[in-house]
Each structure stands twice: as structure tokens, then as C-alpha cells.
Amino acid sequence: MRGTFIRTLVELAERDPRILLLTGDLGYTVLEPFSERFPDRFLNVGVAEQNMIGVATGLAEAGFVPFVYSIVPFATLRPYEFIRNGPILHKLPVRIVGVGGGLEYGQNGLSHYGLEDIGVMRLQTGITVVAPADYEQARAALLSTWALPAPVYYRLGKDDETIIPGLGGRFGLGRAQVVREGTDLLIVAMGSVVSEAADAAAALVDHGVSCSVAVVASLAPAPVDDLVEILAQFPVALTVESHYAVGGVGSLVSEVVAERGLQCRVVRCGVQAMLDGVTGGQSHLRRVHGLSSEMLVKTALELLDKVGE
Amino acid sequence: MEKPPVSPYQIRRIILEQSRRANKGHIGSALSIADIIAALYGGVLRVPTPEDSERDRFILSKGHAALALYAALYLRGWITESMLNTYCGDDSLLGVHPEHTLRGVDFSTGSLGHGLCMGAGAALAARLQRASRRVFVLVSDAECNEGSLWEAVMFAAHHRLANLIAIVDLNGQQALGYTEEVLALTPMAGRWRAFGWDVHEVDGHDVNEITRSIASLDASSGPPHVLVAHTVFGKGVSYMESQIKWHYWPMSEEEYGQAMGEIEAGA
Image (cartoon, rainbow over all chains, first blue to last red; front, side, top):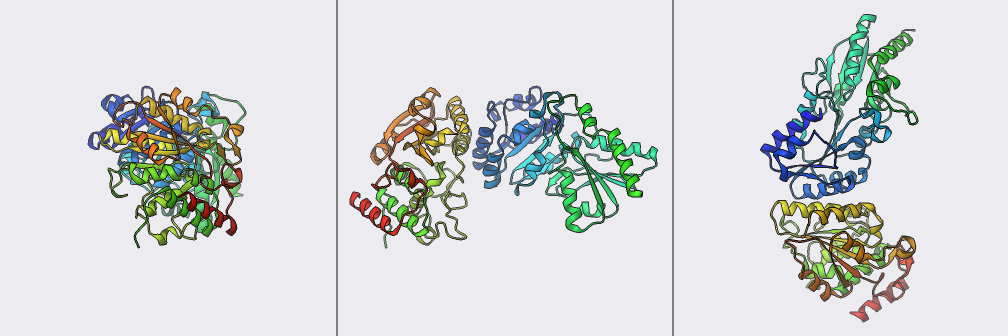
């Protein structure tokens, strides 16, 4: 996603001289297409994320559209208050790009995981929050949001190869995309872990379960109407995200169900708690936290069993 | 009635009147910068109108001293007297800390350590746009406790943002104590110099000296500039000067009368 995103940004920057790219000293082998094409519009501000957001705020006030780039927790949590009191409060077009949502930096430990970014960004008003599921959707999301007048947060994965079947690069602000139609169970997922949800839905066919899968990439504005329409058709929904179970798409779906009085039980699959000091590859960690396709199948079958009782 | 000039006396008068009317504190911090604000809004800042995109930018990073800024905006004719009189009222755009939605306020502040970062971006923007506008950021000395401020100090020096002018209100006090007792900042000038800034020490209550010092700066090339302004907290009101209490405390009617008498005598 990140490679496609930067290449798309280069295309946009060819057309619009207001676009700048700032990094907090991260993005080796990723940012070069931009930095080599536009050396005067690229700035490594050093390892100083608070200042990076502050500088971007000053640049945006003067008419620029600065993109700032770092790994998810350094792009969001470290400078969080500067994001709130800067681009959000001033309604300025700063674009915050966080790479490695969820457990993508598996061996690097909790310091590098992005487990609460969607939650903390989503609770602010006045910022668009986007978490694409694959690189085609990342490109579409950038093309449809880069020129918005207010700030945008993009949560990107590192995977530039996997495609979600049925998604076809669709993206819409305030919309959800159904990528698979079924009748027994609904899965609502966000981010690169959608691939695990899609695989789980395909595997559930062998167990006689017909499963729908909806992708939420526009977390704010939330696709409330689309979710209401889909959720109303199912007695049970599984939400899937590589994020803490609180604050992300599981919380969003629960809010919609509660506020609209829908008859749908929601089970949230996300990271419930971190394991003290334990690291590993992303695939391993997804298994550990119940987010691999195999674990999602198991959860779905147990759930349907219970619901059927 | 003709509007009075932008002068330290007029700014202090408004600070005291509005603090008393609203029964609010932060008086000492505002009095500390009255002369700096008078220098800036009395001649230094090139701001034909607050809507002019090529105007100099000013960021009151020590946002809790906003009353001094509101006084200047009023004296320049950018906000009306009736707006000024809404200070700290319900639905007012004039809160304890300045908001960018008020005419003449370029950036909202209130969270210390944020203003110089935005100012560095504003200065970089002017350079990228080949514009001659300058950016002034007024920070408190205690604000130099914030690590983010030093991130911006490093950034501005590295990129030689000559059009960025910081002013440190060195009054030696913070909310709960004297800066040297809370978290020592000495030597203030030496610290900025060590980070590569062009440092000038001035009497922060001498409008002419502040104005002359800024006029001597090269805003087109070279390092960023900082005026380390030696000030007295609560300047002009004897019982407030250098007293910790007056960071937060509001005045009684009797204290207000004495304060007004003293600044009138000193005008």
C-alpha cells in the first residue's frame, strides 16, 4: 500500500505544486520516488514528530498541502495533541500518513505497533480517517481525499501485492464496500487484515456457512447508512481489525447497532490485550490474537453454534 | 471618540480593566509582555490588514497572556470595543487563550511548546513562496521546559530560517514557582546560541530598544533570531511584581484601584 500511495502522490504532485512531503526520518526505499522527483518539496525533518506536525500546520496555513510520514504510533500518538491543536483546530489540509497499522512491525515490539490509531483519530471531529484494505483501495482513497480542505489521516499497510477479491479498488467517503455476499454471517473488517477475513469467509463455505464481507475503509466519516442496511440483514456480525478491540471498526459497528436499535449481535475480533514483551512475525501474532483466517473461522463456527442454540 | 495609540500604558490599562471586569487572572503574565506587544503592534509588524496574505505572522505562544494581544488588536482597530468587552464571557471569541477565529489572531495557542513549531512552518512556507513576510513567535521562559520547543529551535537553525524571530519573555517565573527553582533555564541566551541562533539580549520593557533590535536583524539570510527579553513579571503594578500569586489570581476592587493608579502614575 505504501509504495502505491507514494507513487500516486508523485502523480498528484506533478499536477499540484502545493503538495509537500515531510518525513520523521522514516521511509527508506519507500519515499525515493517523491524525494528524487521533487527534492525541493521533500523534507526529512529529523526524528521530531511533534515539530513535524507543527511545521506542517504552519505550511498549510500559508496554502501548502503537506503530507507527513512516519510509522503509525510515531505519526499519531507522539504528536497527537499537536494534531488536535494544529490542523484539526485550524481546519488545515495536513495529511498524516501512518505506515504499518496493527501488527505489521511484528518483531519490533509494542513501540512500533499501531493498535489505537483509528480509535484516537476517530474520536476527533474534523479529521477524515481512512484505512484502506489493499493497495488499489489505497490509491483510490488518496485520489478522492487528497484535496479535502481539512486534515486527513491515512493508515497504510506495507503490503503492495495482496488484492482483496471483489473490492476492485473501490472507495467512497462515508461508504462501505461489500466484497462478498452471503446469508448466514456478516463480517465487517478494516485495513490490511481484511485479507484474513476474506480468506476466512471463503473457507467457511466448506463448513456450510455462507458469509458476507463488508470493508470499511472510511472510518470518518463513518458509513452509517451502508452499515445499517447491511447489519439489518444479519442476526450476528463479526468485526475484524488489527487494532485494539476498543475504538476501531468493532466499536463503530456496535455504535451503529445500538443507536439504530438493530437486532444484530456484534462480536469484536481485535487485539484484546498485549502479551508482555512477546514479539514475532505478523502472521504469528495474528494467530495469537485470533485474527488469522484459521482463527476467524474457528470463532465464526463457535459463534454460529451458540447463536443457533 | 479617537482611538488611543498602541502604547504600553494603553495595553496595561486594558489588561487591568478587562481582568477586573471578567474577574480573571493571568494578569502578571500579560503585564510582563505589554511593552513587547506595544513594540510589535506599534510599528514592528508589517500587517496592513489581518486579511493580507503577505502580512507578517505573529504567534503568541504563551497564549495565557492573550489579554495583552487583545488590547493591541483593539488599539489597532481590528476588533471593536464591544468585542473586547466580551472577554471571558459566554459565547465570546476572546477566551483566556487566543483562538484563530478572532480577527487578527493567526494561530490558536494555549498549549505551551506548540507555537514555535507552527512558526517554523510558517517561516519555511514564506521562504518556499519567495515571500518577504516574517514570523514572530513570543514564548515564555517556562515554555522552554517543553522538549517540542527545542525540536523547533533545532529545525529553524538547521534550515537557517532567517525570517523567524523568536522573543523569550524572560521574567523568571512560572505557574507554581520561580523558573530557577522549578527547572533551571540559565543561561537562556547561551542555550539558544548553542543551538545556532542569532541571539540578542534586550530590556523587555524598553519599546525603543526592542524596536531597534528587531530593525537591525537580517531576515533574508543567516540564522533565525531570538530576542531574550529581560522582563519583570507583573511589571507596572508594585504588589504583583515578581509575585507567584499573580500568575492566576484576580484582583479585588481595592487592588484594581491601586493598580490603575500605579500604571497611570508611570505612564
